[in-house]
Image (tube, rainbow, N blue to C red; front, top):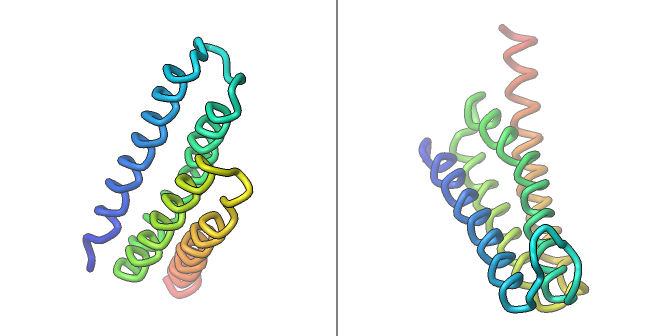
Length: 130
């Protein structure tokens, strides 16, 4: 379980690649020329999925690695898998209908919040207990 956070980090990169691919595909399908970021609603949903996932990743990866580094490696990996599942669910739902993105978003936030709590506890223990 100590290497699970590394697997989660690799899966996160693949998720980012998938969202990037979806935007490129939508650009081609809906004839949205760069640097435009608006046009067909399906393209705009793909673009928002990519940007929202990127924004979420910026908060997620540091908390994953802090939690893993400060005593919660296995649990951080499990929480990271929850985040991944939530983000994939979010992305697939959002691409179909923006109104259906909520459950996946909520699951991803639960995974992220778990890594944040573990990271906070781990860092606090080191600071207070040496």
